[in-house]
Image (cartoon, rainbow over all chains, first blue to last red; front, side):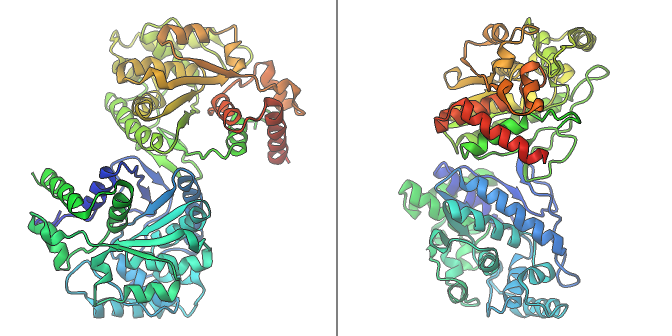
Length: 277
Length: 277
């Protein structure tokens, strides 16, 4: 929660998963701060600041993909639809850098209403100057973060076994770009996100995804402009937009329960009220 | 694998789970050594040597039960039968101490053919002299290990949701003894173990379990005396007997696949051959 009452998108995720009794598992794929609950540990170091140095070692990229494959196989065996979300600081910048490094003409969204495009582009261009290699693992090592190869690994094995929703915007496009190398079953993968990402004119999300793969993109409008709370209405004014798998989790909830988004919004307002008081 | 070729019971567990495509998740509930694969981290410190000091802090007992409840709820939501195994050094001694501390007249098995009963009893009696409390969390704190409260927590929530096999011998009796306090649904729980535990005359396993709860005890005779390998035949001569959920996993495999134990033994021999060469 920000001081002026804007909540983390994890509030939407949590409400959506609980409303549909969807079990959730937290994975640390390079988290600097230890989660305060049981979580999957992967032994990955946190990503470095790509504006000044490579994001991660080559060996960490391989480790991330390998461990992602193990976790993806295990979790996929337990469900008919695996929803994968993420949360990573500076994640739209590393995602942009990875896509540009892989030759994809992406413009990415921001969690701020004024997208700091020129700042991101400057960091990305500087970071990409460190290496000429177009080899995907080199690109990830130079300008990526540990989440991207880990989720690409998960996607690779999970999509062999079950349906997968990549729950997110920009970052999941970067995962998909790497997954071209790690492999996956296209017929079992969709991206699930919010309408705030799809409708963000500062980015080109649908175009970007289409240039990578012809998988479906599902979008939900959570109607947060109708919320009782300023902090949630801010999402409809361009703040936050997506994150922690919020869009995909809300889609999964509506698909599983048959609930509409009005009913879901009432639950989200209840949860906001619970944690704010 | 011991130098003379006796394998860890995890070899039986692994073969059983793979033969039936049963997904597995590793949990560190106080492991001193970090597992070399993705695993659930619970933030629990490893247990101390109860012969010289209390096994764990009171706060760790509560932490273990609470985190066990979270993990149990999550994993139970993913399956119609959750098999819980364990592996802990000195585990039969802490299990004996916990049961004696809770007023249960148990004699426990050993992973050695000559059960060092008097040594165990000496350690247990000395450890129990540190405290008069019969309060279960006090007993665990003084003479237990972190696995016992963690699995009791898992059992508590998991048995509300699905069927649970406590895969093990002595240690699972101790879990069950604590679970009287943490609560569980008796109608959804069974112990699954090997015939080597049931038939161990140095212990009184069935009697012990019966004195705690009237849940079913399932037992499998893996016929390891018919193995091609000395190291595996040693199990039928009183070495190892059980561990890492071997008995319960073999039972789950036979129940899921309809395979008989002869066929399973052939797979176990194949796996032994694979890792030994």
